[in-house]
Length: 95
Image (tube, rainbow, N blue to C red):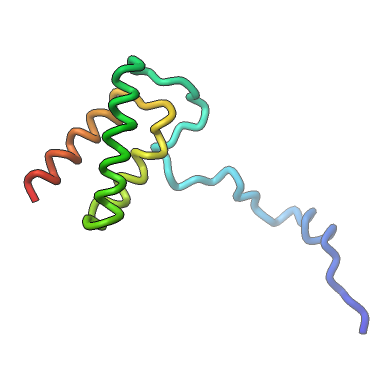
């Protein structure tokens, strides 16, 4: 049986859309590689996000998505991320 599949014709089809650059998660900035907060604040952020991650994993699935987004920024947190974490802490205390 002759195989009609040719990867070169499929890969070079001018009607195919390159979706590698499409990203639905706009809050992740991959170009920033250093924190925009002090090292002391960044360390506290990482510690607190670790605690929130444990909490989300063990007993609070309702916060899992937001914690995951914050964990992605652990290497280079921004003031916006710290404020979001504080807001998440307030949510946990109220519920």
